[in-house]
Length: 480
Image 1 (cartoon, rainbow, N blue to C red):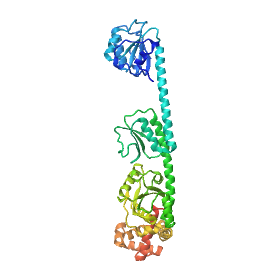
Image 2 (cartoon, one colour):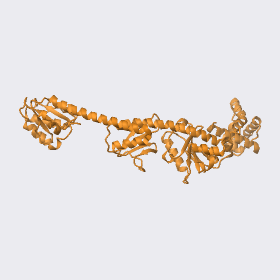
Image 3 (spheres, rainbow, N blue to C red):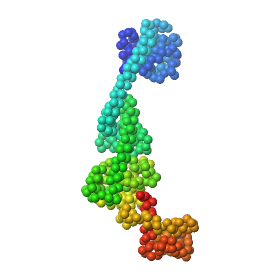
Image 4 (spheres, rainbow, N blue to C red):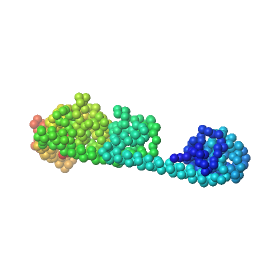
């Protein structure tokens, strides 16, 4: 342990005696020993030193007083004055000035070399450092054992809090992954120290430690362990979502008997005998990040999966509605830099109900708002969801002649068709929207009929063309 002036005076072999009366400061630890014969050593000191001098240049009382003031300002813990060379005793002026500033002074006899004092202080510092190092290594072993013996992240953080004797919180965006005080609100910057957790991903994990606490270096080691565990959790999450995605994909496409679907859903944590709601998140720009992203705290009990390129979250319906959960998911993803649209499905029981909720959620997500409430499903959405109906092929067969003609002749038959169907078959509205003469619109409609074999003016053919355009739009959002 570090040695104080009081302890140093108690070493018999040194024969040190008190020369000053600064009683309240004798128990300060000595951080180092500085030997100097300069009149002003202040700029060479860092604070916490015991200053050893023989006063070779301190001839006058004014010089002696000035020397005391300089070392006191530098933060020295005391002065050891060697007698028997320049001075037979510690100068009274030096003692008086030291007493004035509360700076301890010890008399070092001629027989005691300064190096003996320095060695004793250095040995004490080394012993103190060794004790701290042993304690730190023991702490490393405790944290590593807590993580590797099955306790996981929670056990590691519990031990870290015990070592630091304070509260610990681990957050990831809006979610609290751990809180040492159950039900405690998220920490604020004031009164807490924050430590970022590096994971190589944009998941903004932060370790919060409530002040005051004493860190011997264990926090840095904990940061590394937490980083490793969070990366492992990401890999586990990806594997679990891939497995759940396979099951949901089979349920969505109706390839399983009801009993088999119920059994397989239960295997991934979905109880289909109770009402469940599907939340679907899609992001064209951040598909990879979306699949591995964590979930916000309100969805901790939910089962998540990757279906196609979308993140699907199945959460039990507790009667409060899924809008709040969907908004928390949207906010959570936005904080992660993932711009996604969230579709909400209805609450249903049984595997077929889960399938229906998925279709509703997917259809809702196509509306493009950050969070989209479920609406009555369109026939187009349901038909497109069926693997047995080749709607995509039908749509391509109907519309490809128009696209080819537009490319070859610089025409705008596709735009004209979309405008005509969007304006409920009004030639006048199309002419105004596209800034065309009405005869030009009629001529283009005749070309569409000739190229596709479908007359937009006939109800049955108009439905066929409208369905083809709708399928093309949905296929672009949800490619198989």
